[in-house]
Image (cartoon, rainbow, N blue to C red; front, side, top):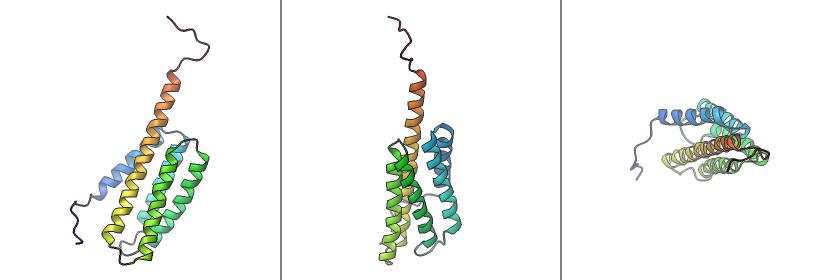
Length: 152
């Protein structure tokens, strides 16, 4: 039963998605969004460099472990909520590696699919966080100051 009902997404879809969202965060995000995007993008590049393509991905586990610690630090220091979800999805990625270590018979399709799902959820959290930070700044810029008279 190792046949997927859905075709695998081409690699360029992920590359386009992560580059677009991280670029959006760098352009319109605040400090938390920019730091999260930079951390995630660097971790993705490191993952590409250390990925072996077969079996348990020990190098990817190391990258994910470091990224998780960085994202926990971001979540603790940020005044935003989205880093909690960002770090939580990264924790699920680390736990997926642990599942593969504990049960080596776990199919490679399930192992890789779970990693992809957590990755897309992470860029979703970053995109939503960037959007809300941008919109809040726009609202603050448009709001009249408390001392301004209003026309009735």
